[in-house]
Length: 75
Image (cartoon, rainbow, N blue to C red; front, side):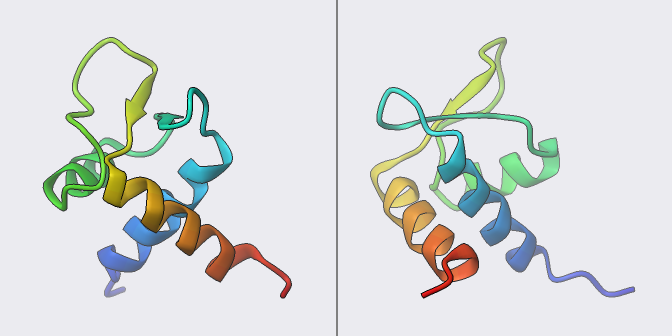
């Protein structure tokens, strides 16, 4: 099966919006390969470390909210 990693990244970023806390942190329960790609795209800060959450960049926070509404809103 040919997987579109960009779509997976978008869905993962949208789901991070559900776990936001402290205005810009999200729990990192997402696959390491996905978080690494989100970091490479400039949407989250470096995910490597002992912290159980990641910091979304300003762009990542905005895109996370947009994707959440696009993918999961009934309206």
